[in-house]
Amino acid sequence: MQTISKPLFIYLQRPDTAEWVTVGRYLSVSPGHATFKYAPSYVGAGLHWSIDPVNLPFLPDVDVPAQRYRGLHDVLRDACPDAWGQALLRREHNLLQNAAPFDYLRKASNLDRWGALAVGSAPKPPTATFDSPSVPQLSQVIEELAAIAELRPSVRANVRRRLVQTASLGGARPKATVRDENGQFWLVKPRIASDIADIPRLEHACQQWGAGSGLHFARTELHLEKDGRSAVRVLRFDRNGQHRHMCLSAASMLQAEYPDNLTQTDRWSYSRLADELRRVGAPADDRKELFGRMVFNAVCGNDDDHVRNHAIVYQARERMWRLAPAFDVVANPSETPRRLSMQLALGRFDISREAVLADALRFGFDNRDACSAYLDELLGRMRASFDASVACLDEAWRQTLHERLQHNATMLGSEAAWQ
Image (tube, rainbow, N blue to C red):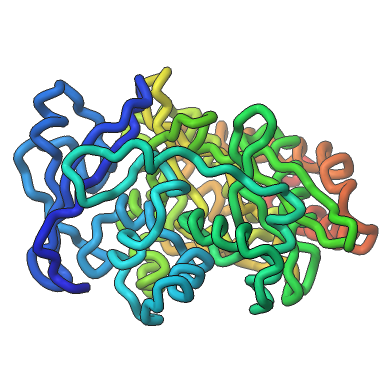
């Protein structure tokens, strides 16, 4: 990262009024070293929301150094695109393959960043640049995303320009934001030629299955194009119309430098994430919800449950951080995994009843017996909701997931639960 002579100002859309304010400034001290400081105007106005309660607690007049991401603070890294968006920005701006996270923060448009932050060079927020863009028709978006993914020329140049403008969302798969007739924003992810299975259908089925099991999963809709291409549409939890919500990834909460440092798997832990939920003030129900998602991932075989696939979101009405709805939950399409990406208990990634129950108290249960009873109840709900949830899949995939359910649920459940 090159040293910058002028600060980069960080803007926040207020949780209460939706007004844009300058929340702080980011300053590069030297290559790889930078600081963040809450703005005097923010402090003077009596505002005190922390944009990152783990790494940037509200401490006026303190220059907080960045600890990771080559000199970029965790929450600002959250506001950067991941693999898909980075690829689009590299093509658009001729960035190097090893460009620093700061380069993506600066080059990405404010139109579609994850969460409620924006960046700019002016001390005051240029609010006109934060208006959400018009969105092309869904079918056009799906068609153009597929063309980009397959390295084909643009089908519609205006649509491709819009997709580059809104390249700030995470993940590796092609995606874009669309707005529905009610003004709500959805993330659209189409099937691409390299997929070994119909991933959009599989994601929709898993999201439906999780919700049907009584867990808090993001709402999804399945779309089928005339050419047979499928796409899944996921409701964005960081938006409510034009109002954006503060968010923080589990990677930031756990201080795990993902995906820049894949050797830090000791930090990838459901129970450690439960501890962080408690520390930021989320209610005990959120820790139990997290436990339920861990079990669901184990049963369905979603081993892509890494630290950027979990998050918290600030709820203004409750005035607290809450566990965000589950997203990007997709059963492994090629094999039945025997372990997850996140630790189920200290040092244990293996899918087993013992590992699941080992840290019961950290998930907010009074004792191990209470956790055991909840586990068996959840497994029962998963069995009961399976058929209706996976109806969109073909017979072969329904059979595959049913066999996976039977095997993993039996392995996780108590003998009494299946008698």
